Length: 234
Length: 307
Image (tube, rainbow over all chains, first blue to last red):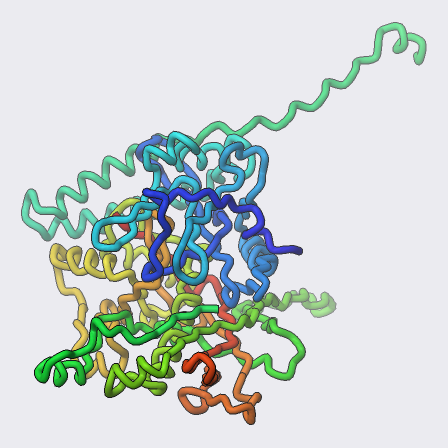
């Protein structure tokens, strides 16, 4: 299997000012997105459960990636763990099909970010990589739009109700711990504020659903035999 | 190839007596000295195998026997041996520094080939740490939450998840982005009750390195700038022994071609190449290494926001 990443990335420069990321900033390797089986979260801004996208880095010498950047072994092992690999180039993802972009970089190695990530050079030589900037949203939509699209297009299977129950259970365990911490703190302390905020979040998460997944194609209705043929066969 | 050219810069040189003394001293600026890759286990050496990858079998123990059927004629039920495997692929990592003769002469004490060798070897160690931390995003178990500060609760969540998977209750290490470490310290300030946080002492720093930050709930904490991010969240981790491993191809087998292994006995190979035509000397360090996840359940990824 040929290396996937590196052949399908976009190379349009998006660094502000048209310059390159300076060499003293650490390189960022290319990646492929993936979703772990229980890798979901309640997204408050969208009021629904969305998959957490993990970046599997295509770095020779890590995760079985070979010197020629072949990630096949990494994909196989992650799939054995139940991951859904979102390989670049899926037409169902529209503008985000090639979701990795390469930024001009003065250092060695590459500087790869997601298409939702804006790269800005800050005063003092620092580089800020920020998700969902006005420019990236105008061109590619928001990161959450993409996450919803993955479910709507059937690329990521919907959240299994048993996983949802387990994730809510984890949230409630955290809530209990926060309540224990607040009980030891003075009224109005940060611990109380954190508790109230998290309690509201858990309530919303319990009520929230998921983006609609496509309905499976309905089976074709079986043609009923006509009365005549029934009579004939009788 | 990673290449850094190091040439003389007259603007930095001394031009009077006092400055001449100052120019002969060397102050090392702060840098990340966190060889946390040492938390990975050395799996083996692929030298002489004819392959750049090593596949290791995994075995799951722990099955329990059952009562035999009272009817002694019934054959015992057959159990299963649960086998799996993981693969580590070796790839060469390298770093090169070029020094001109003029730079070596003018820069003064310390600025010479041994320092360049030392910097190249540091770069290889740093690269190993980078390879190690890129493995965190591939972990199936994730705790923490996107867009939130690192919190003591996340450590409890990760600890419980690890315990449920039969990890021991202590003995792991937390590898945190420096910002996440700061947020954890802030979170500890509002933590009630007795909490076993042991800040790093001078003795502990000597043993565990500059980026060791202390011990909390039985877990060593390391601050590590190599922890990756996805533009919103850092991918920190709670790592237990046996979670990650690495395979090497021992380049020291190539002895006799003038290169040396630095440190002695290690697999990092350093070569020095003289180019008289350009009055320049190149120092090149190479390391053939591959990191892999050995067992997913022995580590937990912990998210915290970058903003």
